[in-house]
Length: 175
Image 1 (cartoon, rainbow, N blue to C red):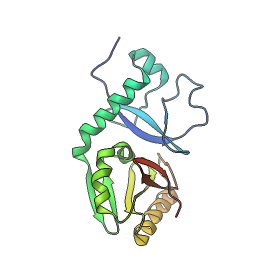
Image 2: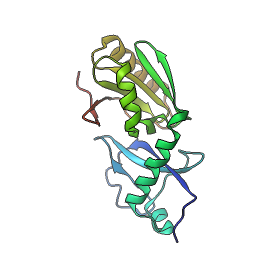
Image 3: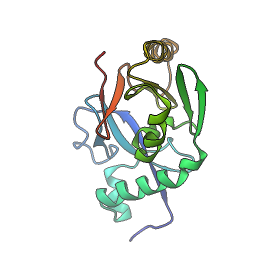
């Protein structure tokens, strides 16, 4: 059976030690040392992640899941809102803002708005703050945002680390 009407989106999730051991575990692809790409059914997105058992039931390969999710994300980019809050930007995307780190075309546009390389804080699934590597005030604001989100707690905490975009890839930012 091949399903064509189900919509998937990629989103960031904490990386797990052994994501391949349990067939009921979510399908995870590597992203950074502490983050992975998971895939959500939807809409609404973010409530249920696609598992290895789901892939088997749907007759989908991991590659097809990844392609469909990426295509769906790209098709939804027009709904992204960017709030300029100098010296940083805040992204809005219906509670799954972390998915936007996977949208290369968005980052090509945002690169013109910051000083230096793109740097993001993604403390939770629904929080992305953007600045440039040459903006000390922006970096401080991004770090404060991350610290505040972790202090307040969130259902979907992700990373205390800032990430920098180099050569179309995200990596841990080392100031």
